Image (cartoon, rainbow, N blue to C red; front, side):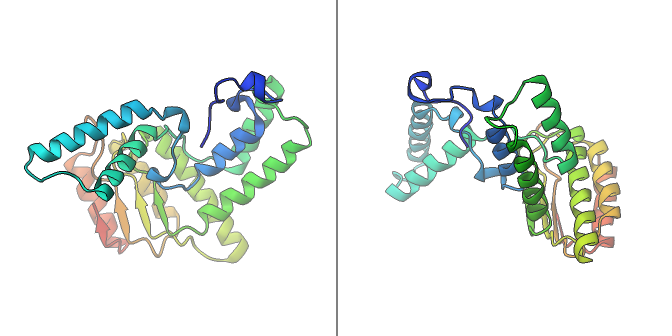
Length: 244
């Protein structure tokens, strides 16, 4: 995603308003963050070609020092891609429910922190967010939210959205969510977050959930042995075959 104007924008574009103060771009950013896998959303603002190439050269030297021989063309391209994704991964807020999004939208427009060229667009983006939110969360078999630096509070916001999507699908189609894989590892979660997760998932019907990947968190965070044991017992009761 693009979150920053190119240089010289004031001279080349009719609308020089920063992207983070535009209604449409903020809506598009929110939509792209609903279910996009962790490694599939990058921010071009964070792209630094010199830094990336320096990391690539360092990786090539390490390869030689290990006695593995030089990288091939494809291996070097994959290394460069991996480094770019890692360096350009933005911090992402959890997706919010359509009601919460509309409240934020109304407040931001009234306070002037975002604006639209036409106020008629407010209703349009509100509808688009609702369609995107429910369309994404009610149909996806996998939610990969690893490495997003989420803490227990942000996990709670994510779970509120998951519950809202589950309620919507049950009321609309009489069906449960089709979620099979939930990946939340490499975040900043603790026992409090795990407890909240298990409590919420007990109330949401996820008959197809087969993988819960959450055990490994960032250094300094994680779960007690007692909580891991409780989570493993929960997975066995719910027939979640992979807990890692």
